[in-house]
Image (cartoon, rainbow, N blue to C red; front, side):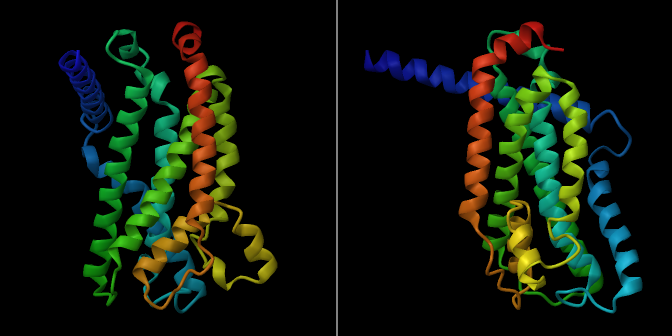
Length: 267
């Protein structure tokens, strides 16, 4: 019986791995393989944001709040934010995007979510590392990067993206209009997550208010990993992971309860 059980578990694990890999390969071919430039387009959003903010703020200030290089300062904010935003969007659309494949008995909605999360997170992390490395090399910026701290920041951003994405996956699948509503609600987050400024340096009232935004914390921690003069004393990883866990658990609970309804009757 023990051998039979172990063999069954091994088959289940293999089927899960095969399904996730197949979905990731399909996602890679459809998202990046059918457009000119492929993965080059993944760099467009963060590069565009960095260039725009560098142009605007270099006209009104002599130096950024941290360091002396505007592109590096903005990159340390944009990279974790884009990681969160793209992860939340990708996971949120997982069931709607993969519905034709979920008709197969060996593919579950969990496979689709995991595949989209892994591919998006790996892509955005690679893009972020490449952009920051290029800025450091092109501008010859002297920094002492603490890679473990940067990895913790990116992990926080990924966790928030997954948590929000899981809840949105249910809401967008059951109520398609929520995709538009969420896009409107999510826009102000870009302005209050510390991409343009350092939350620590704000007056106490404003700082206390903005620290309720969980997206401000991975941005602060990312900058702590790049700028050794910045301590980021207000970062709370526990707070961010707690929010991500609550949202993710609620999303999974709703998806587990209603995924058959979504697949059978959803838009």
